[in-house]
Length: 262
Image 1 (cartoon, one colour):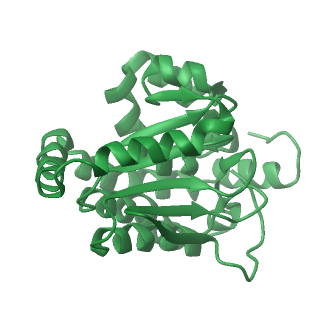
Image 2: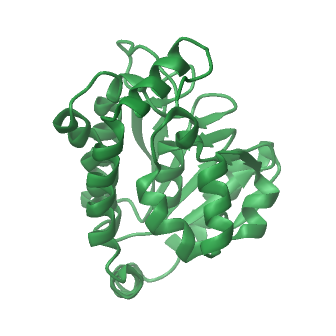
């Protein structure tokens, strides 16, 4: 979670590499997620869904040692519930719907730090690969807000008790622990992360396009288990928390580099 300014350059790049659609985050210094950036990510996934040349999608970062630090604090600091809802709906529901209807496998290649909303983007993909120096975490609690979507996602993935500890301590953890917990599929040397993602993409792309499309749709229906409703509830939960005095104090304290006065 951080605060930074937009530049004139695009924050998200879409390109084809053979039959792989590559979506690359490029908002230095830490890929903090603005409303415009997450809209661009969602639009890129929808473009990949419609792109008949693309058989697989790879999400990665062009910023060294950073996947995404999470939300730009401008999204939350001093904003109304309605303003916050606009962003959170796009990050949670817009991204989920784009992934659900993608029709082809998606792979996130996490190099460096993934936090908060960066975790949301990484785990939205079907497969998560991590470089050996990647780190993960849910630091929202430290600035007085909550990682609402991960209340729905993480306990299903790693169990209630381990999820609670990560979500309510806010601590960072490394790629090896993320692998052992089942958050990432595989840890590879940093220098091999891109090639590992592209090699896996090639494996997926070698299968029948029709069978993968229909099979993935069936897979998504089976694993949904009312998840779509859960993330809609998470939007409301975050909006309710983010406008409290405690949350606003935590956000101000982070910007002012001081301990919050709770």
